[in-house]
Image (tube, one colour):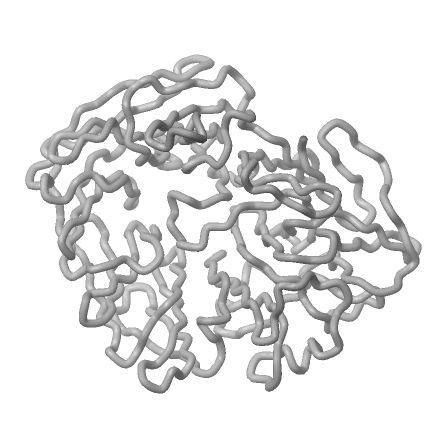
Length: 481
């Protein structure tokens, strides 16, 4: 079963049918939440999006906007309880409220549905909604009527902020681990894959049946989503997309055997699915867009520990794929193991960690393997907060050191430590394509809320404002530009 997306009186696209008009339950207004037709926000000027659960939030589904969730009480810096919010941190430093829904009269000052995850792609941004009544919102039609539609996720088109409802309940990724991103696209952004499940008519989504859906543009205005992986793929361990849009999936073929995994490649053109034969350890990365290997998948082979390891190359040949093993030896890497593959600029690196140290060794550059790869070590890393992010030809992450915190930038040659003052406790952060870092947290001792930045190329951790974002209330902190 596929899922449909709805907006206003645009055609309603189902998996098997395409209606020329609007269908469903229509009414003349009344109570309830109405999906806005547009965000009313220039997304190109937004640095990050934040979703909060609100100080007065509840697990009960929102149905009619409670009067206490007025725009005045929900505003930043206001007093009293607030409901769930989506906030935009602009490139110019402003913090703005973002409304996904409005009341039937078109006023935006209503309680917003909770947002559990936000996934940006080059052309779309997906908001995964929490509990709303019957899993439905209403969309505004011509003539002053409304249609009630399933709405587990909202898709916002970057070009104009147009909003669409979809019954696809996308799975979340609370740990920021980039391997477990549950929405990925090809390099152009025309093809998007999402891990999730389609909700039933009552809005219930069974994540035990999660599989991967392809979300693509079938017209200039309306996306569609159809399942790609079959019923044998339930709860994939991870997936990747290459530049052209081929899909690599790592999954457990048996719900009773978690020690055995299988890797498959689903061609973007719907061709024969390719199943890898070699032993693999689940660590994988796609080739670098714009290079000769942009459509190659690199997969860690077997359970081998460095210094000796094998990289499996899955490459196109004609209309299919082939698998080629490439043994590698990394000097002085035996104490770190093989912890995954990372992209830095135009090169791919193998990484590992042990005893408060991390190590990265360049394996592949310009599509070819490096002779005699040698690791570069990064010391003082007891624990990585969230995930390792890639931006501006470098890796960026926040580390707990045992005595405090530090940001680390690594360009493949040498690590750059950016110490965090001992009176700051940073809990969430995002990284811009330039390498600039936005963060939120608390001041130690006083628990004062903080929001700050580390400018691109700077080693200064600057607190730009206080008393704004409460980390305990922030569900999502996602960079979109």
